[in-house]
Image 1 (tube, rainbow, N blue to C red):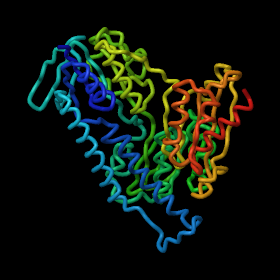
Image 2 (cartoon, helix red, strand yellow):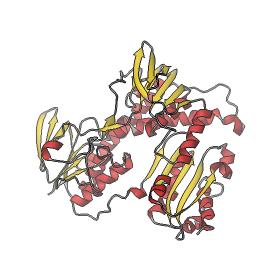
Image 3 (cartoon, helix red, strand yellow):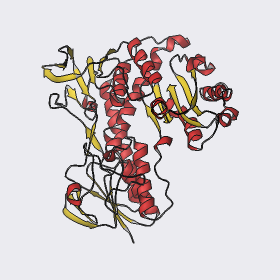
Image 4 (cartoon, rainbow, N blue to C red):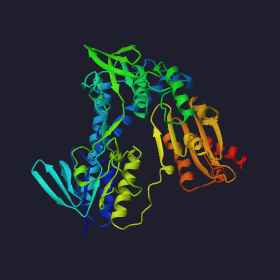
Length: 456
């Protein structure tokens, strides 16, 4: 029987373990913190749970528009919110562990390193365990980047893994970094009722995202009272008693009660034995892999954030599944990033799939584009939704959908229609001809597709 050793129990690791068991392999998984990894314990699951509370408060705040009077302004009990966040994360981890163990996976609690391409050494509470392997998968994830001039203390200066220890809502949260993580937490704390300053080193928030979506989100942030500092790079952050002072490179200072550092991620690839085995990494320490998750060393694969391919839980899981399919001789569909759907959980949400405006411009693609504001949708009018849009890209002359952007409440749900169309290479007419419920938000997707029909 083939023995697979997996280092890391996040989505890339545990999904790979389940696939390997289904394909008949013996599997040992080594995890240091708990099944689900940082995705479940400290990152995606906790942050989206926090955001769910923020979204609810925002909905209640605009209830008067729908004819509902709330006698007393609602407020968040952050201690209760964070207790719930951590309970849900722990329960999700336990559920994953039960599923993995029930499938017949041997789970070792500990830290592992690769001795050679066929051997993994695990340091467990019971001592060192030497594991012979026919295949190895590295799925060790990543951790928050910090700066020498901005060291978190876990109380006032925080990473996104540390915010769930807060017991009271910050009076003034300064968020440094306007990428996905920074924008999500800035939106969340703004919705929870904290004063928020977002420090962005670029021209706009979410500089790597669709320009129309990013501009809309920044406008929403500003209208909701957030202070967005564009073209403002942090030089240092220091604590002064119960306050935090963020100094910018131009000499300005911002003072708040707390500071959240959202400076990106560093792969968990140190002390794994990669250099000794000869596994290639890039300058940032991310493991180099191909589209079937292979490293340059035969029999050694990698998946998830430690590869830096596309730092999403869904991509990590798919990389892990693909790796096991390739290793164990099952049918393999190489990773196609053009079909990946992703979501930014700001309020409103931003969901994307397929090619975007940047790729279209850089590659000179001949594309027809149509966009329609969500506010024109009858269901949106009924629910008092004003901000958002649906935008679709189709190849000129063919009409095949190659990408789309949805901005609005629950955009993460609405994007699936577009994702299916892009994945299956459907045309705008296929989408336009499919029935949608009336009234529904999804009706806007069909309407945008109908507008593209006139252009093909």
